[in-house]
Length: 130
Image (cartoon, rainbow, N blue to C red; front, side):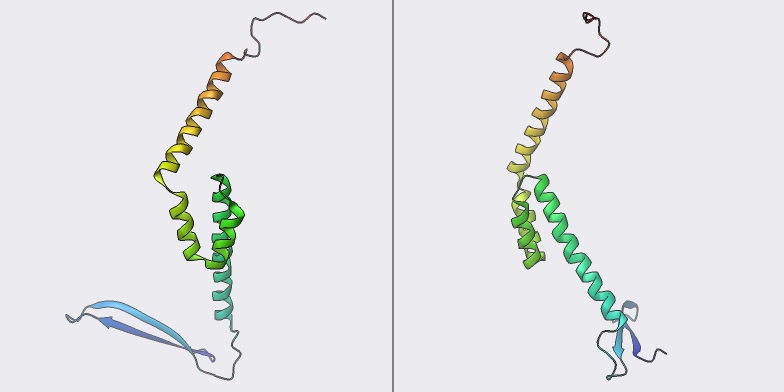
């Protein structure tokens, strides 16, 4: 056994006697040990990575959607899950998505028109004088 933590594992059974779930717990055996154990540090690091990753994703997505990226990122930084849900609800409106899709379609049509009307390199056009 580990000298700082003691594992505890219990099986949750249904009335019929079949295993339904397992509950695992790890608790401190030595109360005089430091509160910053490796398990706590790993959990804290995971939380920080999640928090910053969510803020970064919202910032990048909002910038790509031409929203106010800094404002959304700050909202998510301070409110986390509530802010990210608000961001998803505010930016995933069907009428807004239709407008973005029509802008994208118009841009593709313009690019195709420019490509069709521009002279191709190596065309039979007049040669420049030297």
